[in-house]
Length: 274
Picture 1 (cartoon, rainbow, N blue to C red):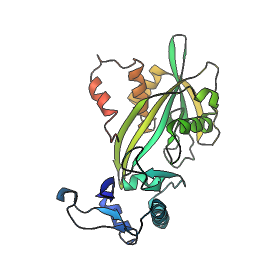
Picture 2: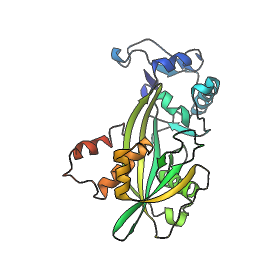
Picture 3: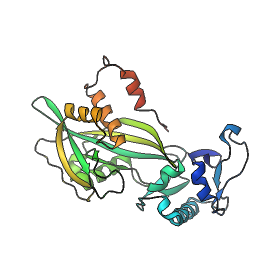
Picture 4: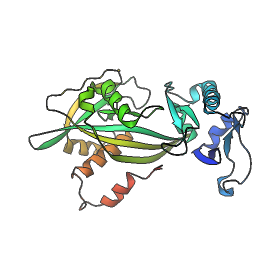
């Protein structure tokens, strides 16, 4: 069902998850009307008494806390909730809860690569087995969700330092190269993510090292081998596949002559771009 604020659809809530929210009628309202078309059925709004972003943030946070283990992996990291990227913020929402409300979320992901012997290599991270999400899976050199009150560029610099020990003097050279988007539905969760992509050509001899305990190890892998890992296995965290495939296309490792090229291009931006 649509999640509506100020007559704008900002998210989607699974009917099953909505049943857990209905008891909190001082926060959520579930009117039965056809404002957004009868085919959409019931929609959810926030209580009109919650008139400011701060009021809404606190009220929704209390609900999420009350739901306990229904929303695992609480990070105490807030995401801005708005109708589109850069638009005014309606309220801020715990990062782990965003998919349960179908909120559009944004992140930054960076391909760290180097060239030697006329061949490209990608630095690949292996996520810590202690991570609450996707433990032990392969990942980009640096990546992270985009919280409120920070720009994409500054967020990437922060993630580079925390995740790979890349100093600001180097990470400032990362080049923004576009974005990918996707929708992923699993259980009560609907991820509607946009990932801003960056490339950083690293100096030969640089060795990444993790600072925040979220990455177990790093490995320098030839690009052709990375492509085979994506093609034949499920070792990478799923959205990393999209970012790396975008890299492979832009750097000429996947060419228009290959079967399904246009469909692959289209699939990299199949989600909500706003």
